[in-house]
Amino acid sequence: MTQVAYIDPSDGSRYPVDRPRWRAPSGHYLNLTPGAGLRRGDIDGACRSVWRYARAIRVPAAAAVSMGEGWTPLVEIEWSGARVLAKLEFMMPTGSFKDRGMTVMVSYLKQCGLDRVLEDSSGNAGASLAAYAAAAGMRARVLVPETASYPKIVQIAATGAETMAIPGSRQDVAEAAVAMSAEIFYASHNWQPFFAEGTKTLAYELWEQSGFDVPDNIVVPLGYGSNVLGCGHGFDELAASGEITRTPRIFAVQAANCAPYYTAYAAGVDHLLPTQIEPTIAEGIASSQPTRVREVLGAVRASRGAVIAVSEPEITEALGALARKGLYVEPTSAAAGAGLTQLLARGVVAAGERTVLVLTGSGLKAGERIGALLRL
Image (cartoon, rainbow, N blue to C red; front, side, top):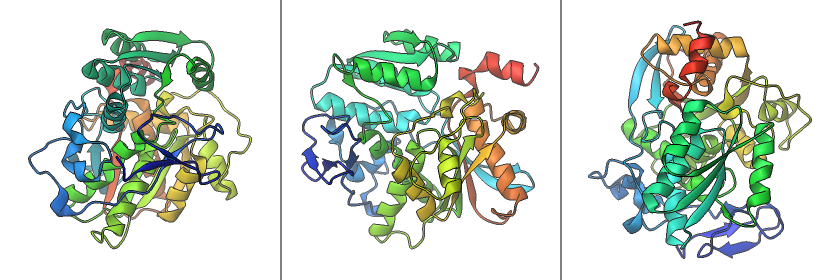
């Protein structure tokens, strides 16, 4: 791992990666130095997981903790009068895209010698960390909001992870985790930059599944922003390698009830502004204080995309529409569908363009809530 280092973007300080860190001594978040990229000849075609791109993942693959994550289907559907491609990220081992980043982050932490980790999550990341920690023979403590979907809590607890429900908002859960980080390594997918080292494989996969070309648009739910960062990193690396000559527009979708990125984007700034926060059915993106605001907004703007916000009724409508196409996803994923409906209606995305709708989490994690929303 000599070719990669942690970097504090606030002052440029660098730190070796042989010792795991989740933030800089200053308290600022850390990024990784830019990757060298990927060429099509680097792909291990015999490997049916994200580790087919091991040449570009800056964690030794020999001891990877993997459960076959990645290489998810890309299927054509009709949506609001257009033909689009649905990327079925919910068909991962634990039922969400989080496995794409978790396989890399847990592999890194395991290889650094850690045997116990702490995470906070609205549910999906906690379930993913708990599963990969179990596969790695590591102990895990996962903090979740007390309002988290019961199936997600059961999924976490079933792995043997210590599961703690925290009263209050999603931000209260994150703050409780930071307070506990003095006793257990804080393996936060929102802070530890090796998580985005895994999510960048979404870009590689879309490129490979598109015949080594790229789509025109990618529409994805936005909470903390790991998929946006991953796409930004991955497509930038492909461009630097000379494999692509253009990058897709990234459209990041927030629930209007919890939309700090949208507020900042609309104001043309790269930092958080005061934003009214209310509960949302899209619990997976109910993040009021995201971490890498500058980088996420920078990735969206550099792609010529946008951040948009969708209402609770719009999310519910998209949830039902996806289910009636056989795509049973949780409300967080449906937010992306609602966003794509807006984009098509406004002519921002044209029906003839190649557009990917990223569906991030399985509806099996939120069955009771979905039943209530769809009045089943």
